Each structure stands twice: as structure tokens, then as C-alpha cells.
Length: 402
Image 1 (tube, rainbow, N blue to C red):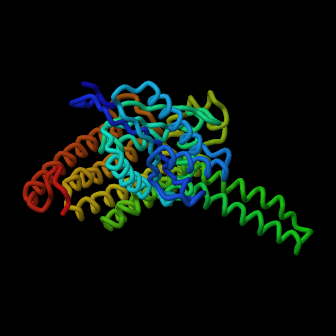
Image 2 (spheres, helix red, strand yellow):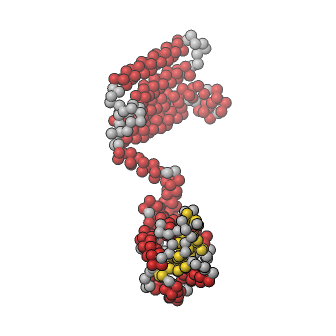
Image 3 (cartoon, rainbow, N blue to C red):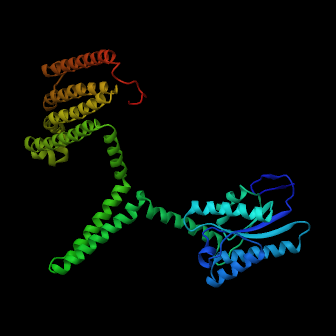
């Protein structure tokens, strides 16, 4: 009893053994025109001789000669075993066609030689690719690996590198970066170079370098920060749910309004606060209440509107997709208005800080805070009742959108 290459058990000791070499890209057929499979010592020897005459550096010819050497060595010490040699070939038309042809020729070689097991002769990585095909017809009891004019590690590394290069050049997902961007830069350089002939007084060579570096910088920024993926995600989201545009518009508009509020706040500070309160650190720290009040007065209206626009956009988006997150965003609008009004009322206390909490300005502020809390609680109760009443319209958490 013996064991195969992958641990499968063979019921009896094989007596008829085939020494097999595989030419996966069919160099034998392409360079010599000899059809495969090649079965028998004479057929393999003649094909190897013609192939090495055509290309003295051909590794497949050396593999065939190695199979003949192994055949002679095994036959010289054989007992009741019978050894035969064969060479099969794949195809240069692609991996699938090559594997299909190898499978067909392996089956033919095994049947013709009545072999029960295979000794595979390999010059490197090829055995990893063809072993499963051979083992579907007969067990592999040994693999003879040898190097001819390069190491196995080098060949394997080159094979992996060539696969990556093919992916980078042929896969549209990567080729737009590896071919498209360099192509655009080459076209721009060519255009600027041609323009320099027609307008020699204009430094187009300098412009070309600037433009190329700008394009290269944009590419690095887009890939480095995942801008392309973000844009792709947004496009897919918009295609699937156009209502996402409401949220996107609300967010952008709200951010713009908030930015205008910050700019107006700085203008308000510079126009109403004495200059020494801003330029001198000690004076700034002493009068920080006046500076803060001016800043809040300038920004609060814009920021209230901006935040409300963002939350309204999100609430409308969730309403259209029937998601219950609409309710928290609706409450957020109320909260934003109440907080904004609270900050506005606090500016009077900031400008003239009360001596004690019983002064009218302080009492009015605390009354407003209490009123704001009551309004917030009332809003929560109203939203809670509305959520219950319209619960049939909204999907439950985790429910897939129809």
C-alpha cells in the first residue's frame, strides 16, 4: 500500500508508472508544429531535439530531456515496475483553454500507456497549477523539480509579477489609473510642447510642468483620501434613492450658512469691539465676555438657520424613505432654535455681568431657560404621540426598504 501526493491512499502498489512533463503554453506545438500528446521515449526525444534546435534556451525542452533521464534511471533499477514517458501540452489561448487541453491529453496518455500513477517532471511553479488536473485522473506519487537557467523562486516571482501587470493593464478598475492618468499627462505635455513652437515667447514648458504636477497631486489626493470611493458611493445612493439629494443639499446649504455666520461674527467683533480688546492678550482675557457677546450676536442667526436647514433636510430624507429617524431630526430643529435663542439672550448678561442672581436680567434669563425646557418637553411629547399615530407608515429598524 502507498500514499499519493496529497495523502490519498492507493489500494495497491502501482506497477505501471508514467513519467509526465507538461508544456502549459504549448511551446512544442507553436515552435515545432508537432502535435501532442507525445507518448514514448522516441516521440519525446524527437520533439525535445527539434524544440531545442529551434530555441536553445527553451525550458520546456530541458524538461523533456530531464524526463528522459529520469526514465532511463528508473528503468535501470526497475523490478517488476513498468515505466513510460509522455509529454502533454496546453494552449497559448488562455488558462482555461490550456487546462482543458491538458486534461484531455493526460487522460489520453494514461489510457494509451495503461499507467496507474504519475511522476511529474517540473521546472518550477507549473506543478502547482497542473497537479489538480493530473490527480483527477491518476495519483501523483512524486514530483521532480529542477532549475535550468533561472531559480524556481525567480520564476515564481516573475509569474506573480506578470499576473499583477496584466491586472493593472487589462482590468478597467485599475487601468484608468495606470494607463489613463499617465496618458492624460503625456497628452498635456505634448500639447504644451507643440504650443511652444507657435508661441515661443510664452513659457509653455513651465506651464506644462505645473499642470502635470497639479494633475498628479489631484490623483494622489483622490486615491489617498478615497474621494473616488466616496463619489461612487454617493452616485450609487442617488441612483437607488433620489431623495438622498434632499439631505445632501440641506447639509451643503446648512454648512454654507453656518460659514457665513462665522464670517459675520468676526466682522461684528472687529466693528463693535475696541481694537485693544483683540490685539492685547491681557486686555482680551479681561474683556473676553464682551468679545464673546459680539461674536454670538454676529453668528447666532446664521448658525441657527444653518443647523435647522441641515436637520430639516435630513428629516425630509428620512420621511421619504419611511425611516423613523425623521422624528429625532425634527426634534433637533426645535432644539437648535431653542439653544440659539438661549445664546442670544445670554449676550445681554455677558456684556453686563450681574452682581447677583436676583437682578431682573438674570431672572428673565432663568425664566426663559425654564420656558425653553418646557417647550422641549412638550415637543418630545408631541413627537412621541405622532410617532405612535403614524407608526404604520414608517418601517421598523432593520427592515429592508421596498
